[in-house]
Image 1: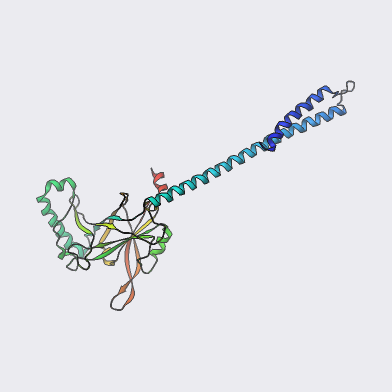
Image 2: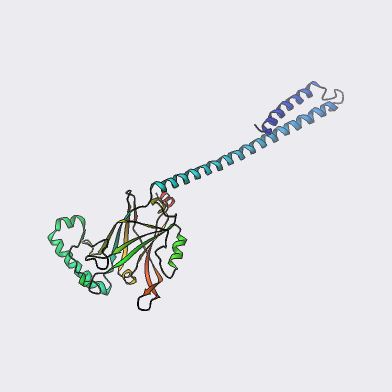
Length: 321
């Protein structure tokens, strides 16, 4: 108990004693009816002790309110420390080691250079649909097995690297998009896929790419499956799957011309522990990166499109639900 609590009790006792003293003494003169000297003393002391009790009560209430606010602050601090400890523990227990990336591209079949390829794929899909109607009707979307890559622009298959850059801080992603060239160590974390249909050309490597046909609307997609991709970790901001909510992902095709034909539609990331992160929307952004020119040996400005996705934070998801 503080001083105010003791004084509150003392003031009540003193007020009672002074009141009793006033009653027992000759507080008023019997002849004149005026207060005597002792009456004035006891009356004054009674008033003062009563006021002291009131002040003690107010002071005690103020101290209790202060202690209550301090307890609330300490509780919040404890919860924040506990939350951070749980978060840090989750990061240690759920590291990003190997990732499978399912990436879906829509083809811009309205582009003049892709019309011959899209027409060829649709023709082959119709043939395949007649041969396997029950299975195809059940799914609506199916893989076209026989693709005539001679109809692709340039008369052959293509080869390209696709890089997914992850930034925990959105401002870092914005600064990256302002750069003149993209480097391998950009981003807090990055994943790289090789976009190369069969037969594989330049490298004895290539992630699985299939041509998908949607029988419901005639759309054509590329589905790229990159299995067991080891992420490139550049700092400690992106170490675990729990770091991805609230982060920003930038998808970049190394060949600028390919970005004008292939539009990312969705992506599914699956960690080795079975955690899945899905994206279903990309924002196209025009950037001006510099490409290395083999003939001159210099960097030349080049306009290209990258595709950005902002993952919802855990707080945004909670509010939405």
